[in-house]
Length: 365
Ligand SMILES: *Cc1c(COP(=O)(O)O)cnc(C)c1O
Image 1 (cartoon, rainbow, N blue to C red):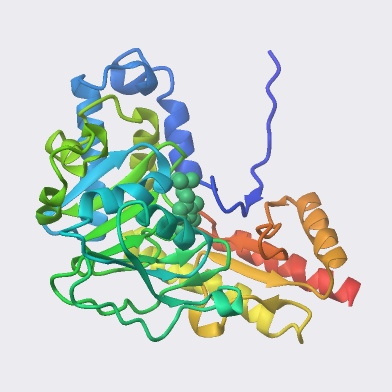
Image 2: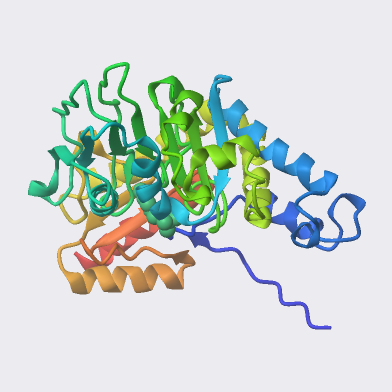
């Protein structure tokens, strides 16, 4: 038998993205025999008691880590965050009211596009004038919108909300948290709906976490297709049909790991430190590295920057790769480089990147 021992690299991909090694190891340990069943979790019925226990634990971890009040439902759905772009208007459109959005990038635009299939959409603020390099300061949602939608972290541009916009009590704030859910402590009561594709900050691709306040489940028209209604999934605890069992299981393992670290307040401290190390390098590079995001809008999760030329950027990505620093190429829409430093990226990974970037600058200035 050939055993190939491969070294883990530092993975800066934007998504799917790095996962905590202890979660992967636990999955490996249980792969052939989950909890004494003699089967892997992938092979057992989603109606079995072993699965049910895991499923409940996963939802409870979300509740506990986020401090969710009783009236919020935790749903595990398929179709990616992209499906929530239409499920939000399907479930929340009300009496022909306007649906209001903030446009902070590609993902916001995709959400806005879907909203328009269901009624009037108003974009109340946008940062498109400066290549989405900031979060608008003035965001004025009206008091009678069907809902107010924001993208909490803009994965491509590296911007993040550090203050939530105000909404009136009767307007639910909806937030796409795909690339930063659990990156910092939030007050969930500010939101009517939170959704996040798992593959950036909590697990593998294939499952989308949707958190909905109970009263909002009842707005959906009766003649809506069953699978498109959040209430279908809420009433059956996300077991209306066969869910993405394995992906939920991996989320459970990674959230368990997060809990073991001390939860969201502990990871927030680590995330702030990691981001600071990298932004300090950018700010102290004499302009060799130029951050894309405006300082007060900088993301804790996706750090975007440019070098003096595209040639140097390509060289830097390639040399990084040789050193085991993977996935540093920026998104094609803004080019440059992007280091995604999600919850599972250790401080050592960021420090290794910073050391490499310093050396690269010395050699190429
Ligand atoms: C990646 C991403 C999406 C798309 O997620 P899918 O699960 O691939 O549909 C949506 N919103 C944001 C903010 C993202 O980063």
